[in-house]
Length: 272
Image 1 (spheres, rainbow, N blue to C red):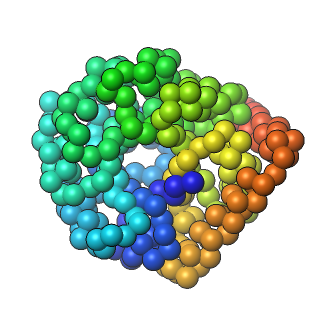
Image 2 (image 1 turned 135 degrees about the vertical axis):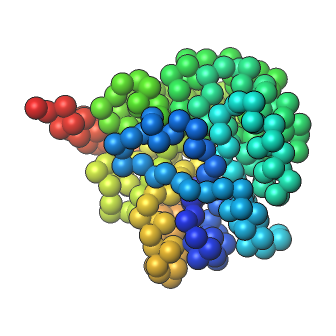
């Protein structure tokens, strides 16, 4: 499973490279994001093109760590933004908040095969059109399901409700059927989280996910204690390996436990 981490400074990128994080994630998306996610305990990046350039210089040639850049939604400015990140040497570009095949086609046209594309499926429209989008000639090379904005778009009370309710299952089945590698959401360190990280990772294994974004607990450790960060990453990979050895009955029991935890939290969110 690929681990993605959004860095805040150079120390975090060094920690990513040293401890085998698969992708350094530079986040350029600003258009409408603060307004959409106001009040959420979400990460808001202050990255700019200079951060893309700095990250590219900091990741050694031949390193296993790749550079992924999330751009803004499709707009008249997209051509310049795509050309800029391509010119700065990123390996993958991620498109957020799309609703139509037309937007994915525009991304493919602008990229023109110069790097790999990742579709961030996070609008109800994209989920409703998922099968058509994955079958299109201009389908992204990879897919990721963004739970924060999806929960907002669906009017849910808690971002994990789409996982507990089966929508993530649908996304994963469709991606697997189309042969598109996929991931979803994020995860904290083992032993943390309102919904335990262990249960979330179990769902990644059960559903065949290939990517997850590492949460604030990992970013804090990468910034302040790289050795601790490395230990947390080793523990995470070891736990995933153990999950993959478990019978389906154990993963199903973990799924039921996750559903119970999510239901309890969602109820608390709506309690008077």
